[in-house]
Amino acid sequence: MSLCLTQFKKQLNMLFVSRGDLPYGETISQTQHALQCATFAERSGCSNSLIVAALLHDVGHLLDDPESGQSEDLRHEERGAELLRALFADSVWQPIRLHVAAKRYLCAVDPLYHAALSKASRESLQLQGGPFNDREIEAFLRAPYAQDALTLRRLDDLGKDPQMKTPNLEYFYPHLEQAILAAN
Image 1 (cartoon, helix red, strand yellow):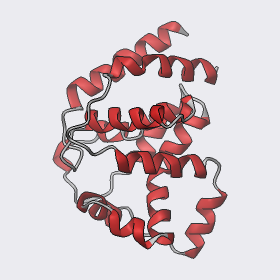
Image 2: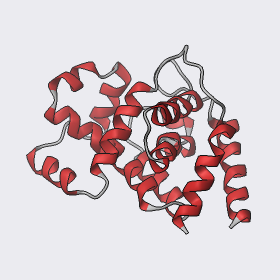
Image 3: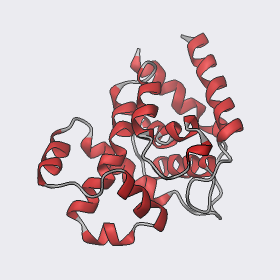
């Protein structure tokens, strides 16, 4: 188990070092966004699983080809969830898999939420299929971990402050360790 954990931390660190400075689509980097979301989750008293999900929810973006641009939806949520599925319990990777669906749900049911989206989020929403229709709303609400995905989505929306100070990635390693141990 410790070899698996050590290897994962090393790979995660390499991903953030090599790709974390890529723009998030806002005025911050991928790394800043991940650390801000995890910091907000921790400060809000979220479960360890949600803290880890907040930290890793956009890891799929770090796997994307930066040349692909913003012209198509690369389904980063699915790619990230698939990467994390082997190590973590459903309570970590399922909210990650559903965090884009949560945005589409919130945009369908809450006009104020939709109106408050940043320009980058509005643009990605269109690539992701736009707000849900009634059938999609019902299906989302029936999905396991839908409520956690909604919490993750709200944390995702908060993590966009270029001035926010956060702990570094290593600070969150104990959360990762606990989540990996809980999955086994």
